[in-house]
Image 1 (cartoon, rainbow, N blue to C red):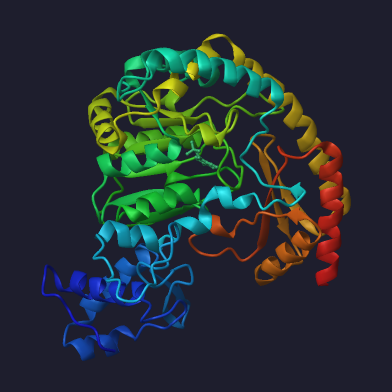
Image 2 (image 1 turned 180 degrees about the vertical axis):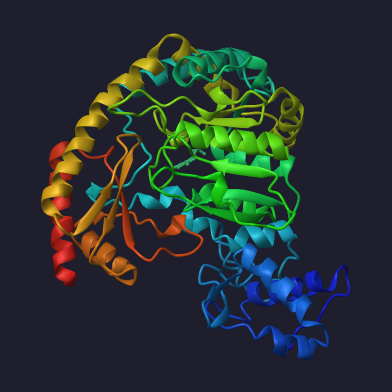
Length: 489
Ligand SMILES: Cc1ncc(COP(=O)(O)O)c(C=O)c1O
């Protein structure tokens, strides 16, 4: 294999960069086998340890995958070719156009295929849309928002917003998070961001350098995975069980300790597991002992159907180790692009600086309208109304699945959130794309679980959302799903 080393820094990083470049340029396609470490070491005249270290780095950043006994392969998730296939943006194939020299960050970002997991792609216009994580915007809320926005557009439009966020909204958020989730904080600890995704990006910028380790759930929210990988983090996967994340299952890294942990303890994304108090306390104790920060992504905690919401991780934290993320994307709309972070006091300054450098502050008019919306009690009322509606839809989905897929599926449901996980027991994971296509032919959109895994699961799983369909449409959608499944057998 012909690769050339650039002579900069340690040898294993030179080999890593050369292979990364070969993969990103498409000179080795997804699925191609890398040479054995021994053969490449001989080719390059370096020790085998150098090659093994480089292969380890490529694997940690998902450029490659291993198959037991068969060797190392270019990851099937990698989108080769730079920058034409950069996902977002127009194609730039015109003759004579020189390829831009992209930063390492850009190369890593592109290799995460951001367009493939871009949530807006999920709405395919199919009538029975089991898409999850989005709420309906009913006419009542549209009317209210129109009134609030036109009121606030007049008095805030000619200034830049305060970069930490509109003070009225920060105060409203602190009260709401305290009441609803036991997050005790001062409004000075609240930062308003353009979606939780921005919080992840800021956390990456403020707390990690390329090569640092981040502990993350497996399976995990792909928005977090891709943000941290683009930052150059090395992800340590912690397998999730029916009780969610378990710090005791972290991989052994010798003396390297993760700087950051990302968890979804109230409703694990995507499995729905709820982390019990004992595990939460163990995680906090570990974070305190190791000086790590824990990001608690509380993305859909508003919705809990049978029991009271379990207290947030933040409410148990006595040592300021938790960075709490809340979003308005679930109970209001992802199109608002408004969310918040509750920060340990010593992190407020660094986060606000990074936020300011990134966009000079979140949109002010919407922040003011939202502050009034919360303060007037509309937000709490909307959550109560949606919870009642979603509880009925969830019941409809569970009963349709239990009768339609009896003996063919395992349903994982924690009576919370906006989706349930369904494992299709008799179906091989490789047959999932065919099922999705069969379902689409019947006007049914079926989201699958695979994009949430770093290592593909050995079972076929669906994440079925129930927030966008009426109870009748849920029953009909499941009937069509059953039909699609039967057509494969
Ligand atoms: C776990 C998790 N966190 C965050 C988000 C997105 O939040 P935002 O729209 O505020 O960026 C999602 C969206 O589905 C999610 O599933």
